Amino acid sequence: MIDTALERLRRRRTVVGAPLCLGIDPHPDRLPGELTRDVAGIETFSRGLIESAGQHAAAVKINVAFFEAFGSAGIAALERVRGDVPDDTICILDAKRGDIGSTAERYAEALLGTLRADAVTLSPYLGEDAIEPFLAYPGRLVYVLARTSNPSASRVQDLATDDGPVHLRVARWAAERWSDGSVGLVVGATAPEELARVRAAVPGPGFLVPGVGAQGGDLGAALRACDGAWAPGVVNVSRGIAQASTDDDWRSAAAAAASALRERMGEAVLHSFASPAPAANHGGS
Amino acid sequence: MIDTALERLRRRRTVVGAPLCLGIDPHPDRLPGELTRDVAGIETFSRGLIESAGQHAAAVKINVAFFEAFGSAGIAALERVRGDVPDDTICILDAKRGDIGSTAERYAEALLGTLRADAVTLSPYLGEDAIEPFLAYPGRLVYVLARTSNPSASRVQDLATDDGPVHLRVARWAAERWSDGSVGLVVGATAPEELARVRAAVPGPGFLVPGVGAQGGDLGAALRACDGAWAPGVVNVSRGIAQASTDDDWRSAAAAAASALRERMGEAVLHSFASPAPAANHGGS
Image (cartoon, rainbow over all chains, first blue to last red; front, side, top):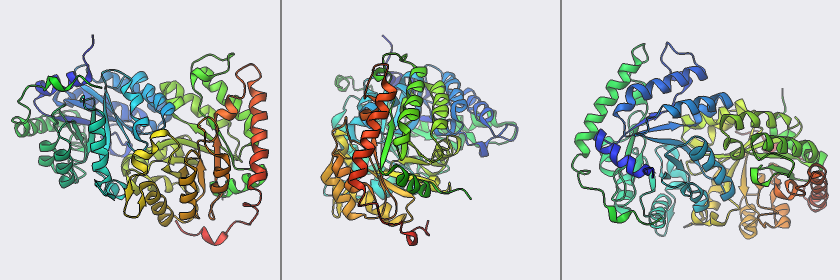
């Protein structure tokens, strides 16, 4: 029996001692000077970041858009990059897919089958039809978008209903429907009040918190909110590690930035994640 | 100066005389018996459908999930399939992407750059940040999901706000923000009342209407609602054409099914699309 992604994330969180998620978002215009601005460049950059900084991370989140941009050659590179994520580290493919049932099955096959992701990000706009085909792959994790980190996130996500804003309805719905820890939520650190409010409303799910660093999100708020009662969370940092240096020392600079973040995060969350895993909560599906 | 996708869609609608959109959703378990259930099979099937039935269609909508499922080999097949769509026929890549600005730029490069789509489907959950990078490619069309055709569409899309359900807020927002015909809406035929209500609320945008046929949607409601004042719409049919026969005659059966649908649709919409294009509405962006 292979361990579930949730069990492996718990173990890795304990080893690393921090919820650091290494974000791989290789834009061809933001590569170190020594690399070519093409698919070979983004592959070398991604693999170098995982090799140098991955040791400090509980999870690696790969943004598939940056590979898709190069067509089939980009996806071939993604297949190799994904293979570099060590088995003990959770590989999250950030794809934000959301489609009707039969199509969602094929996206699940793409991300969880062909690319063997441990976890994916998904959009809630089409409801459970877009989520459940991913849960049919046993032992994986899904992070449903609740409140994202971008400037126009409020457009749809903050629309007021008679029972709170849309993003809170999404969070409550997901937490009520899937209470075994396999479904977490994406809640951005750029809206710290919403982040705290979502955590207060749904104590169970682990959160994937983007937006710290270049996007200006609040690291303290992210660390306070990321862990749930059912599952530990992760706080994603992309540019804060990847852009630590654009000179030839980018590998060692990324490793040093990740190490510093790990230490800083570890001190802040130590007290909140010291308790043993709540085993009674993981029976359902 | 190359014609915009909107101009080409108008012209093709006039030539075909019907809003038929040929949906390419090649599931390996639903291929004709003579084809292998692998990436070669879905490529042969897709190219055969475009070659035989495409002559009756105003647009071809390719569902990228069915290619992504096969990884880089699948995307390489998609690149060849896309190349088969004739220049006078609009190629819609149905991808339902929705991500933050810098990532949306890379998805736009993947779909509109590398794969040269004329149009894409996009999710509104992240607001305009997820849409605008696609509009930076001049002359393309975007279809924003408003009310989809799947069973759990109501979960988020029908949440009540003080000014109508979420999907109507999305439709009004998109129509107010982008009034030059370049942004249409996806509104499913499986919810004919919502479809009519969205059309009444936003007379301008063209609609991409899925859900007719296997999903049980209402063809009459789809035809009445699809065309907008700013842009003609399209009504997607996938299995009704692709599954016309699973024997060796699948090509001719698909062509016959598409021809029959074209005739049936053409009679119904003839009166509503006889007026000239409203040129005064296409200046903005």
